[in-house]
Length: 301
Image 1 (cartoon, rainbow, N blue to C red):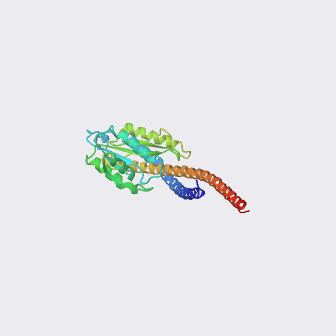
Image 2: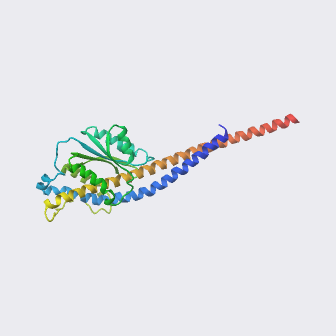
Image 3: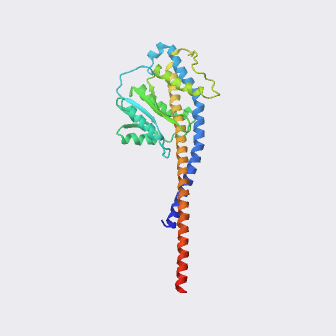
């Protein structure tokens, strides 16, 4: 290969390396912010689940509540949290493939997409995408995602859907993120207990955690369980949706940072090989030119 061609490849690779390095740094900043939101919200999420678990102390109210009543299922809503953008390795592929496999066993499913990637994926797969939310960002307040929760709750309250499942990516560490499925509605005590145990183990692993595994307390509902039950449960569900978005955001930025880091390392490796190849080609070219000069001088002598 001619040295000029190799030099062109080196310039292109250097440009790509600068882009991937910049994206890695930006993702690292966003990842730290998103991780802080997700980790700080986990203890409160545990309290939310403990309150839901302790509602079983009021069995009569549970029987009356629409949020616990099991009805015959005609239509199911699948809430899927993905990203709006790419360059985040297998983040979107993992959650979307996991969701598609999971919803195959459900009845008459429609998609509530949080993130552009989920909307496009399920439209191509032939599913009806009922709603698509995009640009949700790294929100730290429940109010920022209230519109999403309100819409989901409204669909369930009006009977448009008899089941609601939530699919999101659970943040484990900067290197590990796992897709999760949660039956959001109707609420089920067995599912609540399993999800609570999941968060108890997560929070117990933190040295500063004030939440020991297996803690239980009595929840006092005033002025009466019946009067506040219908107002309490939607708020708790809204927070669970909000927290799932925070976990997905932390997972997305972690996956993107690691992907850009690997891309940058690959670019640097290619640069080293191209530079070596360029030096060899340049040396061969110089040697050939010297030989030509020597041959020409002998011919004219």
